[in-house]
Image 1: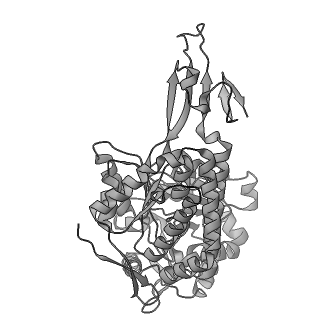
Image 2: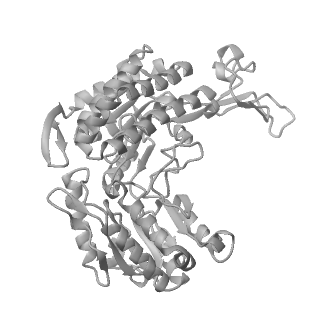
Image 3: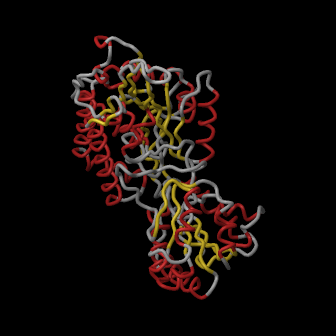
Length: 509
């Protein structure tokens, strides 16, 4: 594997800014993974882990100005958006620190012997332990929240797993900066800096997933890249869990009654959601089922007005820009596809927002219009005009798995009239998060959050956002008839750590 320079590139001009690093060799990947593995012991103490996570948030916040400036130079996402994303990242680190302190994620269960049971129950004590080194593959569109210090890293560290991050090529300078801040936080708690490893380069990412000391992986990116790594993880002599977020259409169903009741509001809301961040959100609504009649026409007029007023924007890199321009052009050339507002090139370095329309009958059966059922990354959505409920069902039945699915209902439908509950039932198998009368952009960091969905949205049933994301990096182990003196403190009867647990069938807090 030949080392090559890693450059920071300005997406506003496409020009290289500075050389940041060189692509990691196989030997350097090996060294990073081994250093992470050697740091596992330093994370064994939950109090140390939670303190480290809080210190990491503190150090990131203290470095805010420099971090945001570096992120904006490499992403063109703007200081306001990036400042908010950094705040979210810090909040997430602190939230996982709280989870570590609480200890419920360990799922402690203790059963004393019971000779009267059939069959008899021996002394059994179960809890969860860290898997080991986690490989994290950064996302392009969230340089803070889904990158070096993002949800995969935060949840893995909370579980007691060191990480080796494969930096995204769109923000290498920021990746180095954030890794440096995290290592500084680790040093304050006598944790080796290898607890957060960082490597650059495509080949380094391949070497990372194959390394025998890597116990699991988290990925956010394209279907093509994620599937290749997923297959590599499964093909190892010892396969490992691969938690990948790959792609999502995030369908929306607008009922005729909802369109008749508030077409202007729905159209404006859709425009705001699909163009947010220049359409570079993984939960962007990319396919919208809207009625074909007058109510649907009013919705399209509102959408047209709002999208037409949206300024051209810069995508994260020129490769994405080229793919967007080519992708919308190919879709627009399909029979019966119209472009009320034509998406595409907005200038040498920008793209303009737009949307396409197509009759639902074109998507009810397999054919060339299946291209419209694939995610197109950028500020575009496809409005599918349906004639009746049967066409809605036919299109929904052909959709792949998604992160989100949304239904826009009228006031009466939301109160239980009409098909509201039926549509929710039809959307539930398609997505990990189902919304009513809202828009999917914006993923709250909350205990009840689920950011995942059926394939290809994700490769597992877990979430990458919210407290239960920690479960991805743990495995259960049970001890049978182990003497108390040999048991981990978490599993002793006297509960010296004060953990919530299930003790002989009763929940103790």
